[in-house]
Length: 502
Ligand code: FAD
View 1: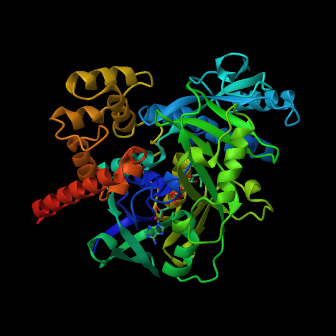
View 2: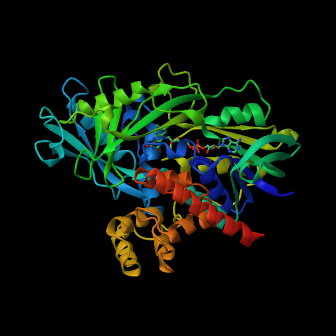
């Protein structure tokens, strides 16, 4: 029976972040994810590494400061999947006054230790940045945050954890965990291998099941009364490109909320998000007509050309697993994370850490915080390290993307420029290894057999959905027939892998 120091439930950003940190400090680590990595909330975000300008209004200064500081840390350790992004905030008569916006942005620029990201400036919307907007918007501000490929951030943390000795079990559900004195006895069901069961033990258990955190406490841990999270749905719409520059917009709405319009996957615009309480199955969450209309309306208040439902090419929804702090409105519930440790140390009971809430942006700090609590219970190992070591493929300078793209083009001249930049944005320096031994067939839209092989072999991909919507966003381009052919190609690769392993 496998024995771990630390066992983690949940392969979202928080679970994988903890796995990486713990494995790097020398603990033996196991992680179980019941579906695909990042198949929960961590692939349905707005994909920003940001301080959260709006949270200043809720006086969440600790959260904003920590999140702002993380922007440059994450950019440095993952310059392929994290990129700076400038946001244009138009001044809207009748909403927040210009002095308040200026004050908020001054704080934003100064409380988080910004070094490399450019500072806030005023913008004249009579120029190109105002061209897509209605003529009434004449002035505004421009400030810095960053964007991230959320699902890839999860996979890269899992890969690094594995490289440092962690066992990452994808498609594996934790069905039961019971304390036996100083150890946890954990029952796992492998959903990808026809429900095969396995039991492992661990000295410390971490429940990072996101929106399912209460369900794990109730069902796997047997505490039927548990109710800690407030599920808040957020939805996004994607349209064809609505503007032709590289900045994002942040629009204020009359309901005090804000909506982003972000350049997305070269040819598209991502618009979101909403905030509504949700009480269904987190796996089944989907955008409502009301949310689509809300987002179209919010964008149309600003863009010269109205955005309608007919413009929508894709939508996605996620559920924020927020700690239930009793706030009356969904948009006011804290976005900060809360970690709660259980188990009576004096009586020698094995420790349990339940994690609630949090942001993609703060996952690394959450992991450091979790490691401190784990260390208190099973003995501390190592010091915080994850902020200074690159994630896989990210071992290059923040201004080094162009040089890697040039090297990839030289190595694989068959790749067009769009594919070169997509691959470098996804894999960084690893793109050179993927393309270095020949590309194989193009399975559509620049997805070559070599890349697919890498995803199956090194990144746990098992279905077309894993490849098209999480390891990449090529799902926006693939036709149903191409998806079908890709599914067959993956099945072939998985079969070869099984035969080789047998
Ligand atoms: P999840 O990603 O949900 O991971 C939990 C995992 O646990 C799931 O994959 C699930 O399958 C697994 N699991 C559950 N039960 C079991 C079990 N019994 N056994 C095994 N596995 C199990 N943050 C930002 O920083 N920037 C943003 O721009 C941003 N935008 C957002 C927009 C929206 C609409 C939403 C919903 C959130 C946004 N967030 C953003 C917040 C961020 O996405 C979440 O805080 C974060 O992804 C939560 O990660 P997690 O690992 O805790 O949960």
